Amino acid sequence: MPHSGLLLNTTQDQPQTGNRPDASVIVISYNTRRVLRQCLETVGRDAGPAESNGVRFETLVVDNGSRDGSPEMVESQFPWVRLIQTGANLGFAAANNRALPLAQGRYLILLNSDAFCEPGAIERAIAHMDADPGIGLGGGRLIGKDACWQPSARLFPSLFNDFASLSGLAHRYRKSRLWGRADRTWADLLEPTEADWVPGAFSIIRREALQKAGAFDESFFLYYEEVDLCRRIKAAGYRIHYWPDVVIVHLGGESSKSLGNQVRSRSGAQLTLWRLRSGFLYYRKHHGCKALLAGLLELVWHSARALRNGLSSDPRRQEKAAESRALIRLLAEAWKETRGGRVSPPRPW
Image (cartoon, rainbow, N blue to C red; front, side, top):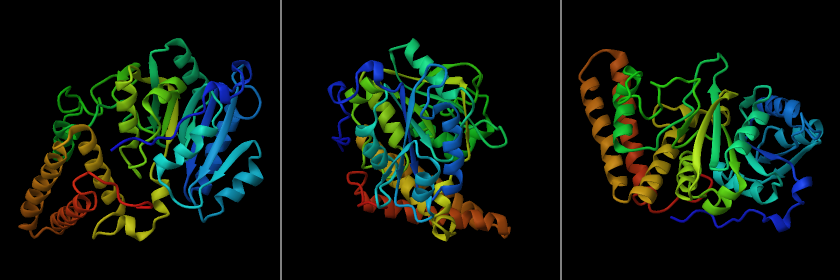
């Protein structure tokens, strides 16, 4: 499964270094008008058209076929933003790939529309990248609206890490270096560290690293696309880093709310199906036949969970059994649709 053949502009295609923005902030939006406005306001505070403490920025918004007036809001209220309209929901990877060839910055900053940069976050991220040319991609400390920590420096998926999460052992033994390894829940959150990957809610990418690794793999509509990119950037000889002083408030799940009841239906969440499809695509691409083992792991776990809870008369346990039975059906559907992780279903998913 090759990554997208889309190429970034070369230095010959772009302004001379002295005139080039230090960073291009790329925001993908799908029916997120309310939070998109807040996102752009926080970016504009530090990364508007004017210089901020000697650092220059540009901002690009890729609208993925929104129906809530988002494009009109951007055009009328943020004239310094470059708006790119896809006309359809292309997904996260493909939408970013539409913006990358147009971005002029030395660095590329990917920012979710429901993620808000704390003051100075972008400037500090650029300073960290300038200080270490070996870093290909970096991320910051993600916190919720209530200031609660969100996983921000993570290990690549593996059968063991998947089992730790499925079984609940990762949550129960958060301070264990073994069970808490995937999300590094045992670590000091205020210590910078090297990671396997960082979430796509906020990431800063070195242009040269992306030119070597290639753009996003558009086979991934949603989920795993940033994991795949980080893996390829590391394979290209660069490191992935996490910085706690780059603080981002991340709400999470705003685009999914526009999908309506089909997302949260008991019979099977659409986002869960997308997650399963992308998981099979990722495992097949990077681990071959382990795609089957990853599917079997989840199948066995949820079969046992459905059987155990289905024997109880407790309504809460009956609900858990129903959830597991629904996920088993989605597993089979995702496996069939991706032919065991070999092909990506047509967009939009």
